Amino acid sequence: MTKEYACNSLKAFGSDVFISSNAEIRRPHLVSMGSHIAIDSGFYCTTEVILGDYVHIGPYVTVIGGEKALLRMAGFNTIGAGSRLVCASDAFLGDGLVGMSPDEFRDNIKYQPIIFELFSSIGTNVVIHPGVTLAQGCVIGSCSLVTKNTEPWTIYHGTPARPIKQRRKDKMLEIAGKLGYLGGNCG
Image (cartoon, rainbow, N blue to C red):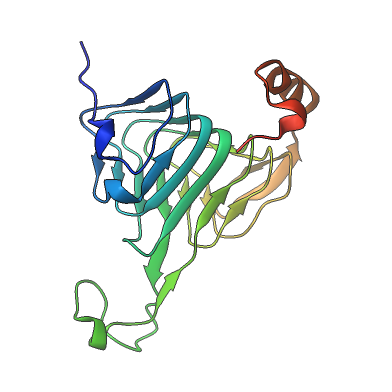
């Protein structure tokens, strides 16, 4: 039997939430979750997290950036295994030191949230940089690098990620409606 993470340490959580006991959430007081959430083994997170309903985070996903950083997922989202979401990063321009240097000597840090709009998802081993918004219904193919915002209902792939074709939305919205999310309005 798989052991579960102690959800009562989170800021908020809905019903039907499973978090593997092998997940490391460094700031649980900054984590809010809706319902129907599954977070697999090896998840590592240092940021604030706000999850809507019907979210799956695959095994060995990393979300980094510290307490001033944010990951927000509106709902009906998936993060594939091994993906890396960088919600804050040193600028690396030589204006200061990087890493664990004292704040007064630090390089400029870019704190910008990563946002998953409704029905957007990423495949395995995707890397997303700070400040990226994945538009409604877009999907990112495995092993892609995302450095810019995406367009709705578009499939992206590559390094850097580029649009390759449109994604069907009518069936997904219909099914979400059957779950009580009319017109895809959830969050």
